[in-house]
Amino acid sequence: MLGNGKKNIGFESNLFTNKSDATPVYDADAVLYFNRVTANGGTLSTTQKNAVNTMVLTFKTTSAWSKTLAFYPFLGLSAATCAINLKSTSYNGIFYGGWLFQDAGVKPNGTNAYFSTTIAGYPELVNEKYISMCTYVNEFIQYPRAQMGAIGANNTWNIIAPKLDSSTVGRYVATGNNVATTVTDALAIKGFLAVSRISLANFRYYKSNVGTLATLTAGAGGYIYPNVMGAFGGYAGIIGNFDTARIAFGQIGNGLTDTEMISVANAVNTYTLALGRQ
Image: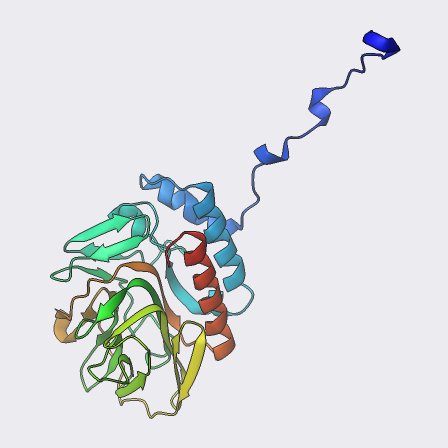
């Protein structure tokens, strides 16, 4: 008995759940990614897992998920874990040269560092001319360095890089064509950057989550060399224009519509914000 006539009321502790200790329910594909990171010696915080899970769920609101071959969250603080493709066990990337693996992303040394996605325009893509790729860099890319893409024979180009011009300084190059976008930072670009072609005459380039349409004619042939990040993949395997900007995320796959790419942009911006990578 308690004082003042109050009774001691008992209860069964197993009838109550401490919700703060409950295990989060994650998307199955996100869990497979977590397991691959762990298997390669990495650890992921709850914040990182939640950020990845939210990003995956957002990708799956459109066909961006099914059209993409590889998403690279760059987590785990090592080459073995940062190279892992979130989408599947195929197309794990390969780091070459000198890199720093940081909480904010992966940083190339600007001399010999590049990340090969192992994905070329042919035969990996449904059509080598119809490609999408994006990167998120939280440091400025400076001219003449390149951030992502590949070039091939017959003037076939797909790269993201600055252009030496006082007004149009973000160069996004489609297959056989040059397209420029105006940014406010002279001779530098930063943040979410992407390109996508869904038909011969429909090519879009993106900065942040704004898409700009360019009507172009595709080159005669598609490039066949693997796309890389931190530089661009060159003809006959030559890598050029090594970058120093730290990379927070990467994506590559078949062409995405404007709705699909903007969904990806929103997902990636939310992901980088959650991890303090902006």
